Amino acid sequence: MNGHYIGPAAIVQAHRFLFDSRDRGAEERLSSWLGGRNGVWRCRNAHNCTEACPRGIDVNRLITEVKRRILEEAF
Image 1 (cartoon, rainbow, N blue to C red):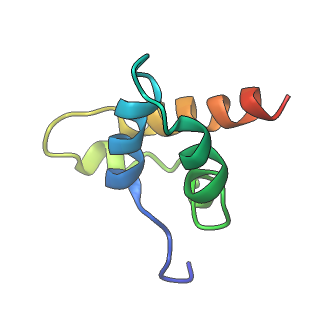
Image 2 (image 1 turned 180 degrees about the horizontal axis):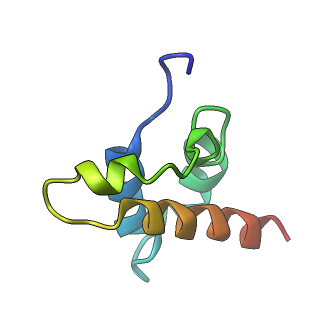
């Protein structure tokens, strides 16, 4: 890692807004920082963040949903 990965907590927070119908900044978030070089594609889906989450959030599932949303928006 290069030290600039936005991290699972930020991705989970962004997920909350991306899947809210009232959100008006989804396109910018998806294209600029979530879909960028240090965004969700840096996640290797090792499930470590899900196991470590003190709130019991399935972080890996949410990151995967963000990745799918980025791919859907691209096509």
